[in-house]
Picture (cartoon, rainbow, N blue to C red):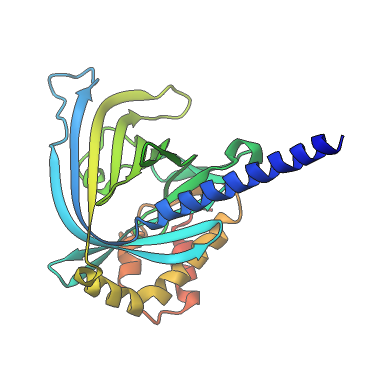
Amino acid sequence: MKKIVLLILATGFVTISYSQDKKTQDVKSIKSMCGCYEVKFNFAETFKYSKDTLNYKPSKTKHDYGLEWVELVEDQPNKIVMQHLLIVDDKTIIKHWRQDWLFENTNFYDFYKDTSWKFKKLASNSVKGQWTQKVYQVDDSPRYEGTATWSHYDGRHVWENTTDAPLPRREHTVRKDYNVLKRTNVHEITSYGWIHDQDNDKIIRTDNASDVLLAQEKGHDVYTKVADSKCKAAQDWWKENNQLWKKVRDKWETVFSQNKNLNLEKTVDKQPLFMTLFDLKPDTSKEEINKIIDSYIIK
């Protein structure tokens, strides 16, 4: 009997130890995406399914380049927040997308279509050992999120998830023929940085009808690590502006904590939210920021 008890205790210890080691590997992989990177953005439409084959115009193949600083904003045991800052002409800084990583998260805002997200709560046992990646727009409003397990095998460190998202910025000003991008996102850590691979479905979604697949595309974004000193302009900009954007994040957290569906206005006074926020000064009050964001939320 004593041997059985000792065996059970030993097995439990090994399981806990393995779980802790695995999570440590996960955290290391996620945080390794921080730093200064030269980025190559590549997108190509691969297949079209439009019935109007004669008039359908596929998106042009896109190759773009940039220098990007990924700032570690929050570093907690179960939450890692990283802000992307795009550097233009070595001095102009554009607040880019943000990614939060939450361990064993159960609360989700699933993108539905246009400017609406539906709240969903998962059972805790369905996300055991998993990390949720929550991706936000440049104004810190929601974009897309999904949960999956980080895999570490054969020297590879990979996270993969499929989820619905709004149209990307490169598309939403030029394409009106679809309203949902179903994204398969693969993040892989490499010896030189990391890769964001995408296999995307361009979908037409309407109420009370089945989704219609319009086209598919391949995305391949390569982040190559360079010296942090090359991104000094972004680091300085963040020091000056981080308190403003903390107030913005705090307001959005209050909105998300209501755990209910979210619908947003595209514009208020003919101005999208990101332009209104980008015009604010670093010392803008919390009250003013809250009022601005509230004006874009459809009650």
